[in-house]
Image (cartoon, rainbow over all chains, first blue to last red):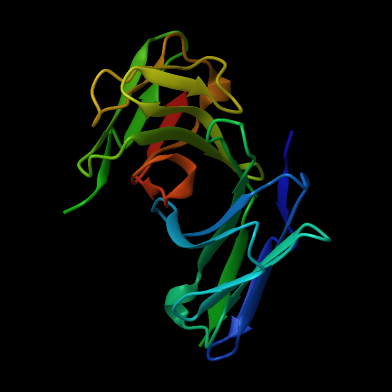
Length: 113
Length: 113
């Protein structure tokens, strides 16, 4: 099986600072990882993904780091803005499981103006 | 506008009364999926579909049915709802399975009394 967990249920950061949200997964065979953002009252929104053959991937103001040795995934948000306040989920999949996704419980990020 | 729509958005029903939550996408996506979201448990996958007439169980399929007769629609059926199915439900779609970002609908808040 597979389980995904986030290290902190809540995180508060000052506007303009960088945010780091951490996630751990249990199955070393996990081969694809995704970060989602969920704003209040809305469905999750894709942020960035990374495959297991990569260690790092960058998007606009976001970076995902994958450490397969310790089965750890992190999302870094640069220059955090009030609009970044939301719940962030990591998710992963296993090969040969037929496109089944496993989600973490989410970290609620609050940006302090 | 590219989107995933769900109906109804809110539903209060009684135990045992069959109900259907509809999901439709206008992006010609092959992959569609249903999730339930509960506090402290995150998103859990109920069923998913790789294409028309192809459906598979996710993590928590008990008490649910789905069908995929058309590419754009993926209804979730609760034949005999029970209070433990009170939850927030999300439908999602993606271009082709796990390798592509999923687009989520706005959610359906279901209460079973």
